[in-house]
Length: 555
Image 1: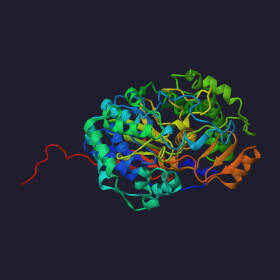
Image 2: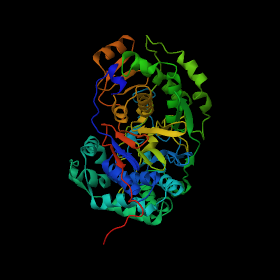
Image 3: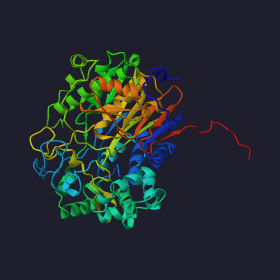
Image 4: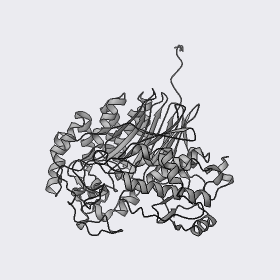
């Protein structure tokens, strides 16, 4: 039994069960997404083949979260120990300007709102997509199977259909009015004006044909071909500004991963413009001098310390983070332990520090997956179309949903995250791999906008400091703060909530912080995959193996 239970200030029992597998593991936020990846492992492919197959499959079965006209990033560890990072986030179109949206307020909570919600709903909110380009590049660079092979599960799900889950239907119902503004989207997700019900068969014939064309012709089908032409014609006729030149000019970026250390473990994460790698390492550096295990999981002291450290992470995210092509980011300073020591001095264990971190635009609607094989290849990947169902617009005749990532930019000119042509937004994505002495220990990531990197931090602490199992670590109650309300998921005891309030925190109970988290933990004999209750997450492991050589059969 894990030792955190003896000193915990929270009560919870994991709702899901982990999976084990010696030959491979895939963890996604949908069972059919995970099955698509495991099919590649069973066919002799590697972890990267599995991840790309899962991503294409998720565009069919988890369409509200991810799409080929979307964005994302992946942290990769190869069997030889090399680490790579690929950023296929969207960029602002060439015609984008800092004042392209008419803002309605300079103050929160309406700071991000613009006239007509045009930075949120409709094609003007759409950024130049990177997902399809990035997935194919990743497959070609590090996979072993062909594009046609890895796309087969997605094509099958689209053409033959799948049963809608309750999770999907709840999200459709939440956004049914916005979906209803776009007939091409509504015909699939709210047919006849009624949201789908759990168990309904969902068939996407147009999208199936789109996937077949991509499998046949590659990413140029979108970036310099008929699919792209269809998309641009629709976007421009509907008031958008993306052009074929934008599509043709899109490039992924690659950069060195960000590295840090925590109690002898190596933390390997994504570089800017995402906040995930830099600020997770910064916050871990601040925690390292505290006896986190001794303070206890979800005790008043433990929760207070996490809240104070998260405040610092958000202050520095707001102050320093941006697209490194446009902003100088002091990465080395932020991940330096001496800098953490200076910031640590601001923490009082008896009272909450009041801070003005402001608000940061981001979306809870994303997907995360992880895949690993027996050779040592690992990929931790987070991808999105931003809001649920993105811009809500679907290109007619293609089944392809468009992102609304322009919503993440600051619609006001003159800030580090203001709109500029070719610019990538700052995100909170945190696809992280943790190693020790060169050997992988676990990888983790999740969904949830600005709640992603503080939640990833807590999962790492749950494993390293509180000795939780993988399943406990992903399902444990979370907390989150921007420096104002201290949000607590169910499970924190009443006495802990009272104790935090006495220290000056404005405690706010909430039903959920972030969303689906996935983890793969690497043991000496097998991998353990875990998904949390906050989404349809499903780990699937591959065991068994091939027959012994030299076996003779009597015939």
